[in-house]
Image (cartoon, rainbow, N blue to C red; front, side, top):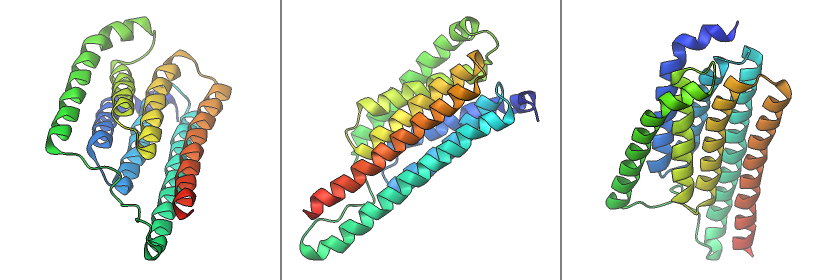
Length: 213
């Protein structure tokens, strides 16, 4: 199967990454956040597979799902440990990683809408600067980078910071896929994603151990 077979899925892939990136900004339950990240990687896979061979593009999907699994196991372990320690007077970690007021949610949605408008205005120029890239790929990549950076600037929560970095990195990979087809770089980027996930998992475990102490 060649990358040309995925061109008709470019628009659904761009819409998918936009919806999931928007939900990552507003959802508060960590389980739903990780579910949205796993779905986002499907959209990233579609947009990358337009330029890369199928097996190379699959490395992005598989590495992304491994990142989700690593973060999920670490968060589940942290929550379970907090619950067990509750009998000792330690406050258990909630399944809701943050609490947003109505005004905060409105602000995030308005900021995301502004970024979407900026992306739509910049996309034609970027598509001309990067030969061979499709318009839908530009939209998806800029949306991921824009909303990822917005998410990064609005939070200090460990899980949200890791998710924002992974989202921003995925946007960069979509544009890079149109510039270079390199197995080595694809593996390197997958390693960076896995490294971010493991750093996040370590921070979850370290916070739990500190709470026990």
